[in-house]
Amino acid sequence: MGKKTTSNPEVKKVKADWDINPTWTTTFCNLCVEQIQAGNRTKGASFSTKGWFNLVTKSCDETGKNYDKDRLKSRWDVLKGDWRVWEQLRNLHTGLGWDAVKGTIVATDDWWDLKLKELPKTKKFIKKGPQNLEHLDIMFRNVATTGVAAWTPSSNTLLPTMPKEGASDLDGRSEFKDNQCDMSLDIDSLQQ
Image 1 (spheres, rainbow, N blue to C red):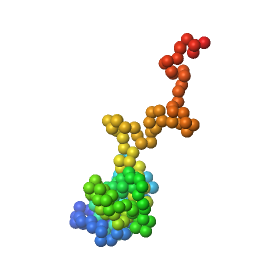
Image 2: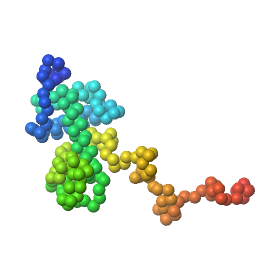
Image 3: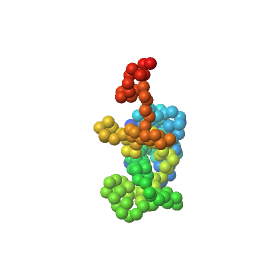
């Protein structure tokens, strides 16, 4: 079923250098999506034992690199971190442009300088957005927090998707009022 992988303790661990060949990241992302679609993912967003075995084996077969689970998990974590930063840049700010050729955000140098102070990892996205974005969305969209819709009870704010109390309806009324629950009404008149 493929080449021997580093699950063999006698094989020396190889340091992964993903920058040598960018297609290795694309191959890795393709294999991750394949395992997700095959149902080899756990509830915690990682892969099942079968999923990791398939990733290690197929990655070795397709790239010729003998990367073990730890090396692939490290790559997963780096991609997840990059995707989170990208999502924060894309979704938390309005009024920005888009350069379809470069696949990145068009913003002023001042805006980028501010972002670099807030999120130092944004530097890699000034000239080009993340590689394999469609795959990254499949890999992380519903399992990684980005801060876009994060909420805790102690935040003293409502979720961004929840209307604030008293927000108007489409017909312009300020809020729903149920006369049967209105404590200021005369209870005797309701009982008749």
